[in-house]
Amino acid sequence: MLTRRHLLAALGATGVAAGAAACSPSGSSSGSGSKDDEKTLTFRLWDEGAKAAYEESFAAFTKSSGWKVAIDVVPWGQYWNQLSLDVGSAEAADVYWMNSANYVQFQESGNLLNISEAVTENTDTWNKAVVDLYTRDGALWGVPQLWDSIALYYNKGLVEAAGIDPTQLRFDPTAPSDSLREAGRALTVDGAGKHPGDEGFAPDSRAQFGFNSQADRQAIIGPFLASNGATWETDDKFSFASPEGIAAFQYMADLVNVQQIAPSAADTNENGDFTRDLFTQGKLALFQSGPYNLANVAEGVGDSFEWAIAPMVAGPAGAKSLVHGVVAVGNARAEDDRKDAIAQLLTWLGSADGQRPLATKGVAFPANADAQGDFIAYWSGKGVDVQQFITATEDPTPADTGAKANAGLTAAIPIFQEIFIGRRTAADGVPAAQQAGNDAMK
Image (cartoon, rainbow, N blue to C red; front, side, top):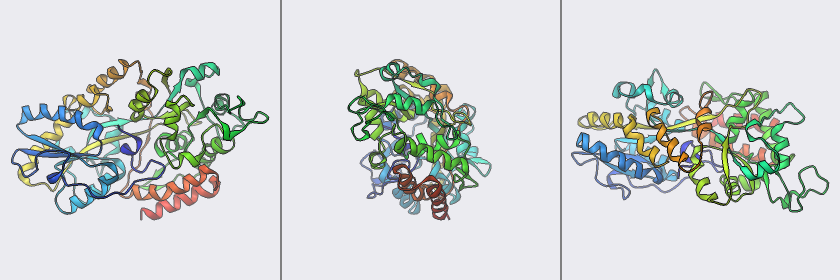
């Protein structure tokens, strides 16, 4: 399955995992063929769950072009280390998946094909937020493949019993209370049936939680900061330690430690999927997350209760979803006699037909708008309306960019975790996280 860590680098509680190097495309056990084969191109990605969709797509490409495509799956924990090694030794795949937090370093080193020159078809059908994310120095550096945004999963039975309208939730750090805190209190219950603020409420015995505030860059931190008017980065440097950013961080941490409507950071810092699992178990009423968790939620919940998707929680600046996307990039250092075929494959990957298997199999929102209806139809067939994820892309806040964005976020996340667990105040921790992140990106 696609998870938040698969789409946006270093978003899990523990950041990017290091791992042993996987095989290069020419010797992979995940694919077949070799880039040394006369009519075989290589394609690398990090998610096993998307492999079948690409196999279907490439079968059609082979019929039309005569070029076979060998798929190489390198797990996320090994992907970036292995990619750097393969690029350095001229063993990189012809085409491979890339995310926004990593592409700049490869682009600046001259390793990526200029998509603005290599692909001329279907470009007006690509998701604009993804195109903007991968546009730098006046050119586009990847063919948009899939995208995600943020919305609010909710347990219908729990919110209806509490009289909560999940479509109207707002937060405001400057107000003594707001609809999110009020809803969270009504939806949080201890073992004796008491709510936060009730006399004798026992947080250690909570049987039900209201909301998933946690150190999650994509689903929580990014949207809350932007929705409170804060900016994540400016000119490839972190700038979130503004008054608005500090207030948003303290608000998020207080939902855990003061209002006690979110699970302890002792759990969520260690396991970024802890709250998702609580939701599927019927123990969390409101779960802010992305379409990368659609399959996980559907499979985890099964027939145990009804759930639906509402707009993400809005703040004083509105509802600002973090929108991210994955692109397919071309190997600029491939042999010259393969460049035309690589351009053909990239063109196919940008087409509706090339992306449609991602949609019809429910893998992810395809970045080509002409294939998007198939993804909507897939989930509609399962009784799930995914429109809120589409609406969330209309006024987004950008994902991480910059040549060393991964390094910066990896340095900042542990300090964010200290804030969420209550060991540091936001006034102290947020400027420290910004400094640590910017130092790591120098």
